[in-house]
Length: 422
Image (cartoon, rainbow, N blue to C red):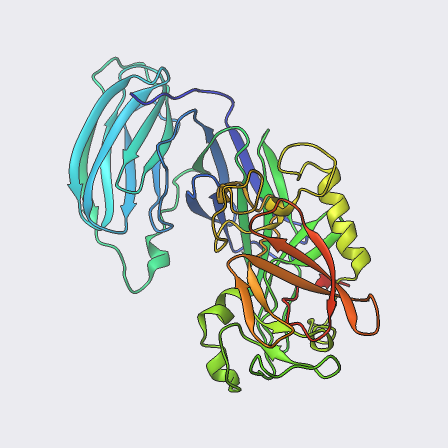
């Protein structure tokens, strides 16, 4: 028995803040379920509220839609699978009653089903696979009284050379994503080389206005950005690497650049390291002050504090209060952090992380003794603000804590860098 509660579903539409910078595509992810769908310019997202979803984890290449929707006749359900396996497809009414169920083996590819509905009303199709469940809503307004049915109608193979061609486009303006109250929806908006991150906890239908900001380093790498309060931040660690040093080489006055786990000096080899691709570069303080892209700068201690104050005052504390700086989970990404059983800690239930879209990662650090440490557990980020002639202020997140920490460390340490827009 699948329990489904009907409620007011929300329609989310999108528009660019500057009309000359169009939205090429959108990727929307429910952080709790990890269900992801792709939309193109002009399409809207229909958030379908359900009370129970059984581990709904879907690969990005697996999408579906029902058309026409609403319909006063029969309808067609199209569903794309990225691998071959047995699935169950069930039709439910709004009381959660199972009306029809088919179990069949589906090959990799796109499949079509003919749908008939018993009487006028709202229905849900639930697709149960090994990874979890996907839910699709359809409204039937016809006058016919008939037996509900799900009839297989054919398939097409996936285009393996062009995976984007497998993304099913809705025949209507709405594409559905399941959610429950309190879920965080993470949007990635793409326009050319620019990517903007927006997070939202849906409470009503709305139009999201998207601002694209150029953030390109001297290696011509483009970075995701996110607006938090009145500040625009990079939403990933800086990876600019003009040179690379082994961890045993350190200085508090000359710039040093490190890639965690790499002990050589060849830039091309360093860029092939998994930790470089995931966490970016670790910089000593002299290097950190000079590496931000044009139009961006290393955030001062005051600017870090402004970020923290905004999150504290605007509902980003994990326990719903507005006291203390228990905002680590709202800053931390939903991946790569080790698990923790500490209540409210970053590693406790990763799906509740990243409410702000800041996407902080535990890239570790290069320590005073000349060794790497902390990957998976800690993230450190420099500010240009000096605490003394030998130390500068930084921010720190640790997997076992709910707070963001402010520390003064020696300038020889190697930390990550996030830049903020001028």
